[in-house]
Length: 161
Image (cartoon, rainbow, N blue to C red; front, top):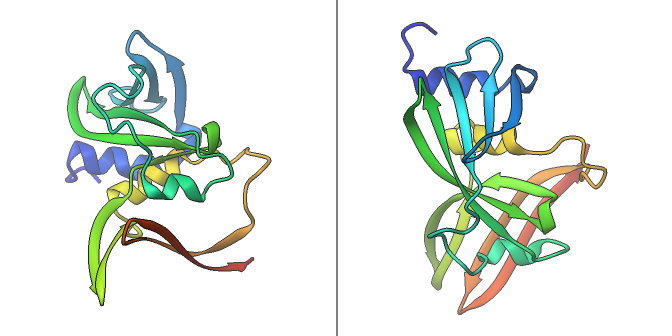
């Protein structure tokens, strides 16, 4: 771990949520690692500033399509190591990093969003997930979200554990 970059070290520590504390700061909110205080994640309060103003298609798969976008930085000793965006879905019940975007052609073009297990965005999504949510789903699986000629199409393959 000593030979890893600061970003790789921070991402590795995200696996241990108990090491992180959330506080308010002048920019918005800040997660600090209790063992490595130079590791920080800053969530900026300026809601939707410069971000997409219309929810992406996956927001409509939620019970409540209310969607909020925020920017965040991962910092090491105050120096930005990674910048990303969070989307808060279902009226605040499900915060997650905005998934990767791609397009596939199968008779027509389909847009979809995804996480690659083990990637930085996937690990951040797991970190931001609210585990104490009473509405937490008990299913695991794969959800494929497509745009088909402007229509939202969701294909969900899941199983209950």
